[in-house]
Length: 124
Image (cartoon, rainbow, N blue to C red; front, side, top):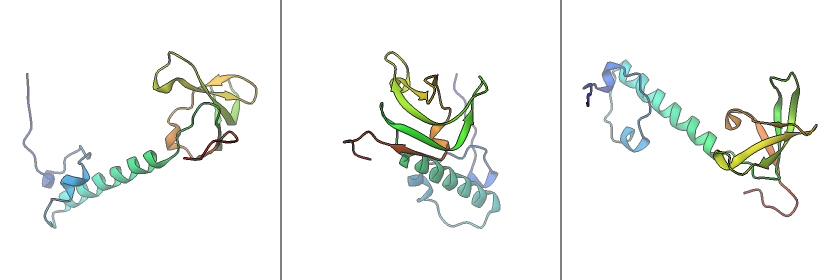
């Protein structure tokens, strides 16, 4: 089964993941729905680019969150060491707190943080 819905940007589509290369091809318009849709697409592109530009922790790096994170066990931490666990998805990274417990940090790239690299490693 395959289905599609013929729709233009002037109909105010909900999906707003249009690639920049397609948005750049569009002609000028004064349609408010089309303008709002284009703005949502551009905002989404900027947000994804911002996430992608953030550094990704590697095993041994120390991640310092701008705001402490409350976990289900009731503890709050803002400083973690990235630890690799073999056999886990997404590179197998979990984060060791200052007390030694292992945690996952959901949506890390959506948070404000800095990475302290081990001595001798570059920041790139």
